Image (cartoon, rainbow, N blue to C red):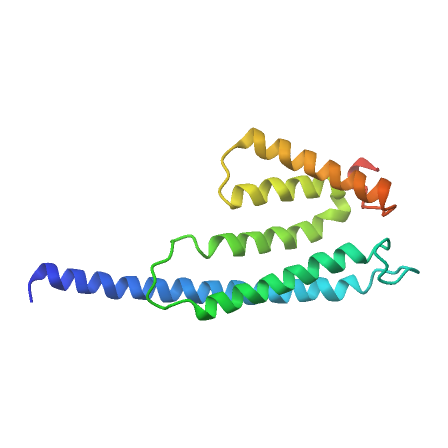
Length: 169
């Protein structure tokens, strides 16, 4: 066997190891997402409301979002388990889900002290950056506008109070 064939064979073996490691990281990230979403879903039931699960009540949207998060996390796990072991994946395939999970945990810790507006705008901006956006001004504008629109919709139209934080709103 020639030296170039040996090098090619070693490269293929190394590639398979990288793919398997990437697959394992995706599976672990999916499990972390499932645990986080299930934890937040349980927390939704601590929201007290005389309206129960009425769409106008404060539990409805958190229940909807956390349920969707759980379903998508399970789908991500299934995709990770079913993915072929020999398909080459990107080097950063593990980064996005892990970073987004960390951002969501950080958001949950900061939303009350900072307030909904600041914490959510920071979350949207950071999530855009993690997902690969490099348009700084656009990311800031979209994060702020989207946060304000959701804040107004919840506080004015749904009569749901969101944490005011340092702004005292």
